[in-house]
Length: 208
Image 1: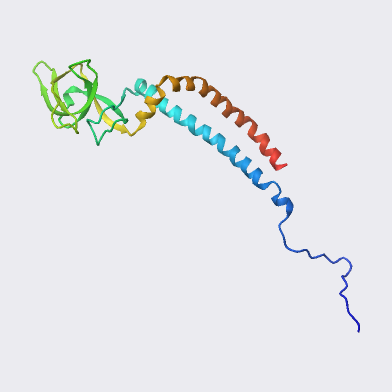
Image 2 (image 1 turned 120 degrees about the vertical axis):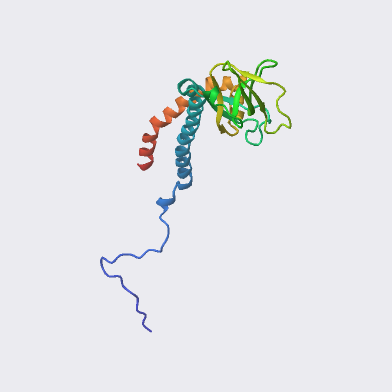
């Protein structure tokens, strides 16, 4: 009995079993994790820095440059339109333009004369040009127990509300957070700069 064996022709390619190249997977999970962290860290730092810069611009620079005022609402007297922790943005208008229904920020004529943000329910313009108003919180059942005389030629009308941002402002004002920001912000900025400088070199090493 004769058995015929196949003979490979000279120069023919050897057929290999299909499989994944070991070089394509070696170190892939760890390398992918490092790349993900390396790419996420700069964006995270940039996001935090961007929020900090935006908050500083709105709360510190804007009022001096654009003339508006910001105030954190501490009570629920104007709920649900303005909740505790919301920040109000108010711009000045002439007192002669004041009408019922406007929400204004002014100094209470009683107690420590603290600022209050309530809705105008009545306006009285005297012959001498002085203006007195009565106000009421939307969530209160009765009008405020005083009549406020508005000093000066302008009064601040609430134009916009930034929800919940006041909680962050109050947190930043605490002594512990102030100390963390005092020393942590420069360190965070330095780390971001180092990551920006070193990132191209790390990518070149990865490609190599």
